[in-house]
Structures are given as structure tokens and as C-alpha cells.
Length: 112
Image (cartoon, rainbow, N blue to C red; front, side, top):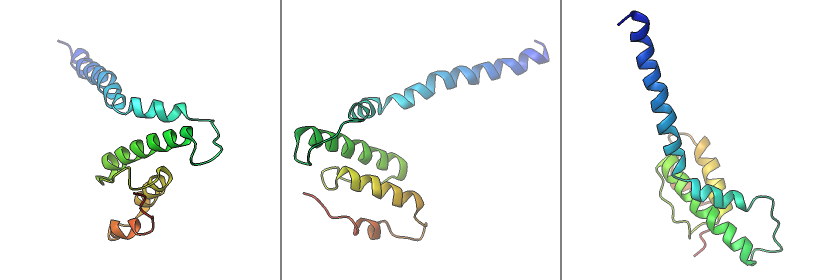
């Protein structure tokens, strides 16, 4: 084997792995993501309409899963609204390491 071949084989191997592994990782939340994106552009007449309730449920489930994966925080999607979970994620993203997670949760009302 030449030096050129010895360099190209590992590079091609890495590229093939990336091409096959990355789509598998992104496919995990594809169902939730597609349900969430299907709601895009819709408007709702109120928070009690069936369409809004379905949207909020999908958003809650998606955001709770994302918080678990991104920050290791397990939150019950039935406890917080979808928009509360979006705010919690934003706060966690920029919180300092010495700040308590529980302090952030106190700012959000729980919805049974």
C-alpha cells in the first residue's frame, strides 16, 4: 500500500460512518419534530380549542424530551405548559453553573 492509500482509507471510512450515523441520531425525534412542524403557521381562536390543545401537547412532549437530552433534566410534560418549557430551556441554556435549577422552576406555575 502506498502512503496516499493509507491516508485515504481512514478518511473514507470516517466519512462513511458520519453519513450513516448522523441520520440515525437525528431520526430519533423525527416523529415529534414532524408533528410539531405540522402545526406551523396555524392560528388558534383560543387556548381551549382542540387544535391548540393538540399543539401544546406535542410541544410539551418534544420540549420535555429535549430538556432531558440536552441538560439531563427530567420534567413531566403534564406539569408545565409548552411555552413554559421553552422558557425553562432558554434559562437553563444561560444559567451559571453555581445557580440552582430549582430556583428557575419556582418562577413557573405548575399546571396539573
